[in-house]
Length: 85
Image (cartoon, rainbow, N blue to C red; front, side, top):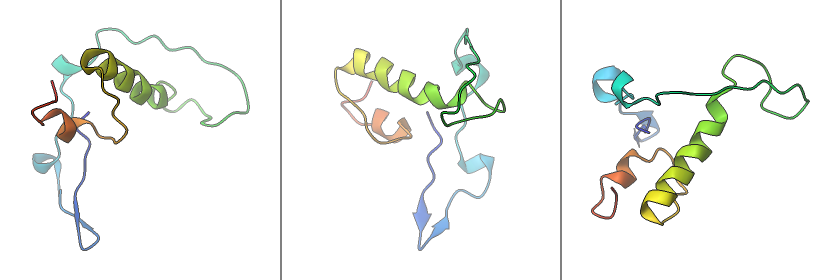
C-alpha cells in the first residue's frame, strides 16, 4: 500500500523508516488464507508464498470500491488524490 520510493538523480530519497510509510498492524487484513501448490511456475519457493497475489487482490478491491483500475503500484500516492478514497 505505502511502499513507494522516490528517486533523485538515481538515489533513493527515503533513507530509513521515518521517511518510509509501512502498513501498521491495525491496517492489516484480519485473516489471510494460504494454500501451497506444487508446480514449476514462478514464483517458486515457500519464503513468502502469500505475498505476490496480495497486489492483485488489493487492486481488485480498489476497483470494486472506486470503479477505476489502478495500474501503478504502490497505490498510496494515488489514494491521496481527490478522486481516491
